[in-house]
Amino acid sequence: MSGLSTEPRRLHPLTPVAQAGRVAPPAFFGLAIVAGGDLPGGPLLRALLLALMALAIVAVVAGFAYVSWTRTTFWFDDDGDLRIASGLFQRQERRVQLSRLQAVDVVQPIVARLVGLAELKPEVAGGESGKVSLAFLGEADAQELRNELLARAAGIRTGDQEAAPVAPERVLVRVPPGDLALSLLISESLIAGVLIAVVVVGVTFFTEGAAAIGLLIAVAAPILSTINGFLANYDFTVAESPDGLRLRRGLLTTRSQTVPPGRVQAVEISQPLLWRRYGWVRVRVNIAGYGGGDQAEGESSLLLPVAPVVVANAILARVLPGVEVERVPLEPVPPAARRRAWLQYPRLAAGYDDTVFVARTGRLVRKISLIPHVRTQSVRITQGPWQRSLGLASVHVDSTPGPVTVTAAHRTLEDATQMAAAQAARATAARLVAPPERWMTERMQRLVASRRPPETNLDEERAGAS
Image (cartoon, rainbow, N blue to C red; front, top):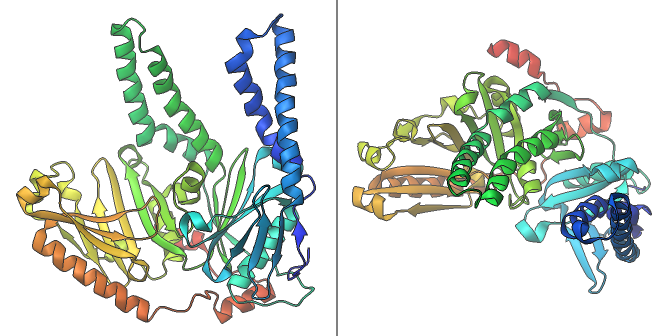
């Protein structure tokens, strides 16, 4: 694949096969649940009939996928941006403006992996309107196109027949599967799910089985969520490269994500109650383009599923250079907040330094949320009825949509008003001196050209911190 070709290109010829293969298992099991008991004959004949019905559905999907494949092309336009033309009944053309590129994902569902294909998902600022994907390309072509997109977004130009060089990388941290499994087993979501299941079991017992369906859902949901979390984040790896932070994860479906420098909008460091014994934390981020509206986007907003605090701080230093959360001075909430949030009261605090605004919340699940001043989208003050009776208000510092919210909760109304005005002023001042969108420095461009890794070593930092 020529890196800078402006000629329209098609997706991989096996794309219809991969698209159809994705619906085969759910089609079979769905038919088994809905119609399995109504089919004639013995178990073997019913299984055969179900397989034939599922194959018919897969054949229809493959036909539509083939027609879609013939009508899908992509190319680079004269401005250097990626264009994608597609549509079965209504023709549409999408433009991926690379100056707004936020991240690039390479996703391989298990069916696509079996035939050597991958889906390329460039994420650009713009929420829902920024969602585009190329499903499917050959695995090597997907990696090459990812490199090309990142190189163009960084302002690196290559010759007409020259593919963008592969940027070197250095692995910073790899999450051990044992740590991941244990963290999921003692996570707040699983514990809450188990408690709900216990309540439903009690209701089912006293109602003599009337809530059996609710029991099944209550028991299965936390178990399936835990299993999915393990499969999705298995072998979670964070690597550093001149073209950004590279995240890789997944056992069945693998995902390779590249987040260019400076694209992280907000960060949340959380620590559930049972994780404190191990000194573990979870790190989530907001990235423009990832709305966090579905499960896949939620996974893409995960920077570290579980890691020791010192490792999380070292990764945070790569994402937000110069930021040291522990050194940001925080101001506690007034005594009146105890009556509004008696459990969280000792932990509530907020503050700022020259770079970021920080809010601390939570008691059972401790959370520290921070947003760079330059990434502040808006500042709001909210005041509920209970807060009004106590003379309190909350300040919300908004970033792009995502799982991270930065809220200085339960301040005095006067303090909240001053805090909001000051943060708006800091955001305006930071944007006036912000660097241009082209994020790669001259040094990083030279490193890419020479294929040298950045001079960083997380192991040395970890040993020094301990």
